[in-house]
Image (cartoon, rainbow, N blue to C red; front, top):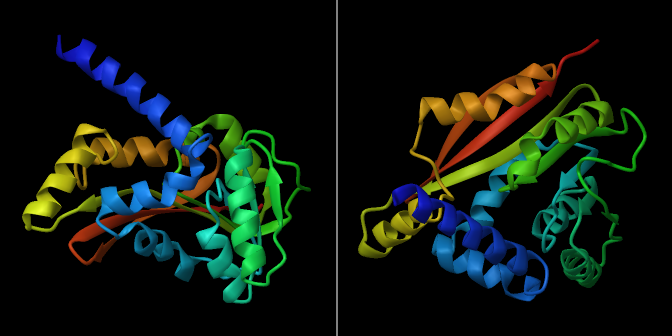
Length: 222
């Protein structure tokens, strides 16, 4: 019974997130804000200190917040996303900020860029595609020797308030956050990148009533 419930919940969540990322993309920021109690964008910004550039590729750029931050920091960011709705939203956001959007509709498993054309790549709260062999092979191909992929795969709400506890429970129920510092999860997250020839480090950042995991995969020099 428990396994059937988890399978049903997983199927429902996949459908929900697919709709949120495509047909209802305009609601994405609101939902992200609500489920994180307003912390979502601060979690995403934890990637910024690791992105020195100048050429940075964002995988799954979503509504374009990180793209805008990177432009503002004087970097040369590119973004890919398979969602036309997200591509349109991000393009409008970047244009309103008076930057030139460099966004491409594409899948991470088939990136339309030349070999060794980026200094870093980044993905914040990506779905399981980031751990696929084809995705990692593409990232390895595009990064310069010594280049790094920065992934924020998970965050945890750790506050003691009633709202924090409710939100943390929702994250666990919807399988959006594994147990903090779970060794099995950490090993599973790192293994695909290590097998592809990356050196992998994991950094845990504590924020206001939350903790964010950052995975740093460095391409070894030839």
